[in-house]
Image (cartoon, rainbow, N blue to C red):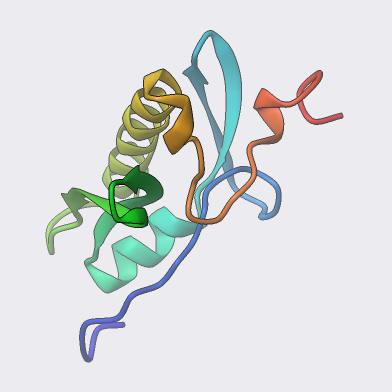
Length: 117
């Protein structure tokens, strides 16, 4: 990742991984896997949130650019960036038009039934 620009798709939906954080989205406690923060820290990468959106032309991809992990940022700062950015993007996505309710990958068990159980 340091040798050139790469796109790495990781969805921090809390299904897998060993290092998690908690955030609150739409009044629910949501587990966030921190693997994307680790990769962004080592690659000094920018976080991007991907979702689909309906337009007159049909289904399109919509990408929201987030914070970039800079050279002097710590791993903890990268985790803070991810959690805040992810929380904000998912909150806006949930509040949006129901026709746009389709993420570009991922599954949020905390919004299904009783915490995905």
